[in-house]
Image (cartoon, rainbow, N blue to C red; front, side, top):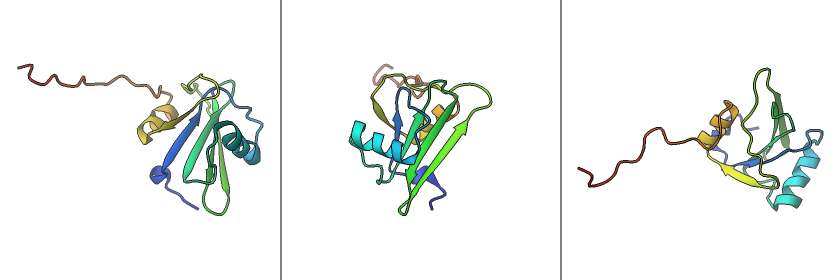
Length: 117
């Protein structure tokens, strides 16, 4: 089983609210039927519930599914609300999300204007 998930090809976030009572089979079916994605590919799929204080992570490691469930003790995730949408995240966006930040961060340094001087 893979221990380092920083090399995973795709990180998908299922926006909106997911029924957190769903287990591996229910989440894999949701991925296939609603979003036409392959749950068996080299991908991580993230889901959040109504309260946005917990999430599930589904990953197929080649011989079975791994399901991570985390409930935050303090705070809430800045989970995108658009229903029935899946976004492909970068590793940086995933870090922001799991640190409680929005995946849409404004640029800290504005791009330079060429020829301005």
